[in-house]
Image (tube, rainbow, N blue to C red; front, top):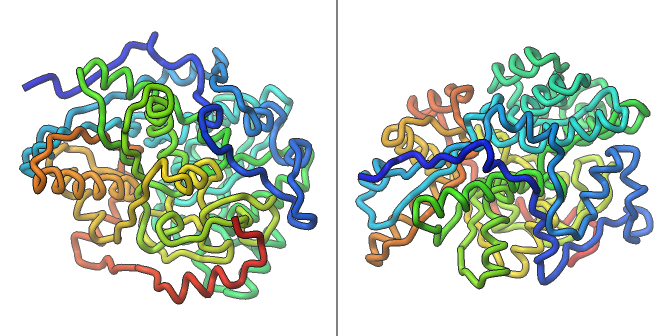
Amino acid sequence: MENKKILLSEKEIPTHWYNIVANMPNKPLPPLNPATKEPIGPEALAPLFPMALIMQEVSQDKWVEIPEEVRDVYKHWRPTPMYRAYALEKALDTPAKIYYKYEGVSPSGSHKPNTAVAQAYYNREEGVKRIVTETGAGQWGSALSFACEKFGLECEVFMVKISYHQKPYRKVMMNTWGAKVHASPTDLTEAGRKILAEDPDSPGSLGIAISEAVEVAAQDEGTKYALGSVLNHVLMHQTVIGQEAILQMEKAGDMPDIVVAPFGGGSNFAGISFPFLRLNFEEGKNIRCIASEPASCPKLTRGQFRYDFGDTVGMTPLLPMYTLGHNFVPAPIHAGGLRYHGAGAIVSQLLNDELIEARAHNQLECFEAGLLFARTEGIIPAPETTHAIATAVSEAKRCKEEGKSETILIHLCGHGYLDLAAYDDYLSGKLVEHEITQEEIHESLSKLDTPLI
């Protein structure tokens, strides 16, 4: 049997982020001013983001250099390992070869610090004193808390209420790194008070938490907002993952036919898949990249490609996205990081152009796949990650049925050691399915008066 772990040296940490916009046949459509429906310029984002990140957001350059100070922090955990999943292959009795790139070795246990460190650095460089953000399951909030501690910034986090209660140790991680954490919706903001007036028992959503965080940032000159997914610069920062993965696959003497990753707003999917899509664009390869989302929040597989707000209250510009409607509140599934109504503009354009694929899985199927992975490979995956595993399992079974020996690469974007309550619910039979009906999707989308694409 070959060596299961595929490692890189510290010298092989990428020196640049990859900007897929440079290779896209159809560029992402611009954000719009909600009042005029006209494209907005970089200056419109200045109250929320430092100018360096705004310039990355609109950049058409293929490569953006990673500051040395950011790479120095990356060295705490990068390069991350890749493994060949021999035991999982054996359990599935498949001719497919399965690999996984493991981001759970980062300080916060997920891929999120790749962009959190970069965003904290650029904010610090422009004199920002405090960053405010939202978080779903807590991976992003804990990553930003870690990054802010590294660069001497205050951090304030609005955490989706259902996850705040389901995942208390994520809050403790954030507090340990010095962050202030609120269960959203709160009575601290006008946006939160509006939601609570309509639904005092609201479980919260990422869209609501974004509204609260944006409101706080917009009211204080010394405070900026940071987003853990969706936006172009965030997705670009994550491409260190896929660049490392390409080197590791080459060391293994292999290359994936299929790359799969969970999908919430797009950051972990982009991080692993965009560098492989570059090989499709530039070298004529035909690597299938599949985004795996929950059946209870299926914006890619059942949503509409149109302009919509990135938050619930409507404080952001209008963004071109596959969406279920900004008022949509997903069911309180354990994969809190995937409970977002919309998809990033880049991913949405790629899907519309049929350059990537999307797959939806229900909650029980995902936990079944996660349990199989834990029992074969020894790592308990985050609930979000189980969606990609479910897709990989279905593809491996297809390979068996068709007698094909394809290579599948999973983005194992985080561990589930702070999500054991979710596994306890699954093992004790307490988990229920949450699949949204077409009527519910239609009702949510019918409330939008934003432009169709």
